[in-house]
Length: 338
Picture 1 (cartoon, rainbow, N blue to C red):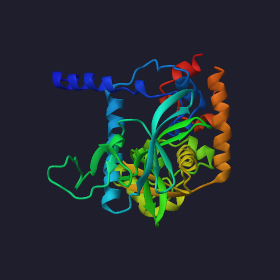
Picture 2 (picture 1 turned 120 degrees about the vertical axis):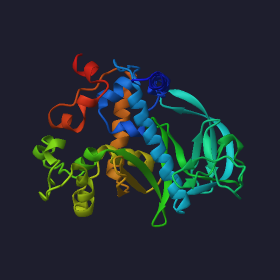
Picture 3 (picture 1 turned 90 degrees about the horizontal axis):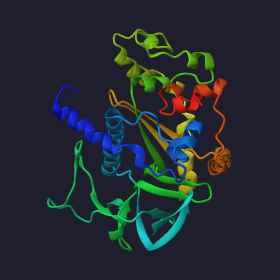
């Protein structure tokens, strides 16, 4: 940073690091990733290089991308809600530790396990200029409250929905439950850059092509149809306009959606890719796959056994390693030097 102001902001941001994330249970967003990285986090290993301010800004961008899109779903009338049937204080073991939770049974029949003080979006009865709200894009976010104040018969919007699976050791939150074609559907919002969006169009069944992908190699032309681009930034729009049939859902994200579906007992998921450079969007509908869910259940129990017994998983090798970005991983030094 060139100014004291910038340096002050950076010093503040590094205090917001991910170090306080609860790794006493498995996180759906990480479970489809490298097993060694998961094991290192779950056994208390810290990256050799701490998170910098730039990484915190990156995470914050993701949080506000979620908020903006959740607000848009609400205003468009396709955000799901539920009504409180009952509430009770419970103790539930998630992963390795018992947790005090507020179990909220909804009219849907689902039971949501919130932490005391957790923020919810209350379904407003009326709007008032004196009510607290935050301006996001062109719409006002709904009224925020804590789960402690929600009473029987009251409604709340299903954003940042908590989930727990004591048997398979999963915990966390999904971005939202929305309505797609009238069906309750889990949605997960992903912000990626131009190059990340382009990678989703590569043929993963062609390992040679996928391994050789290089952003510089498709700056001037489309790698699918060879159409020339005047500017590299035109590629994403061209791919979306002309080659949507070539997109493949990233397996890691498919696994994440299925953990949500099995835990919240829903049959449909939706992945929302948003290009952070131009806000172009690709959205995938994902139907529940019982075979994948059985594999997730089996792998989660195997991973948990390794965590409990301090038995480090084998590093991915060969074609398996290509699935994981070792060069970008915060744990690459600890993993490959030991």
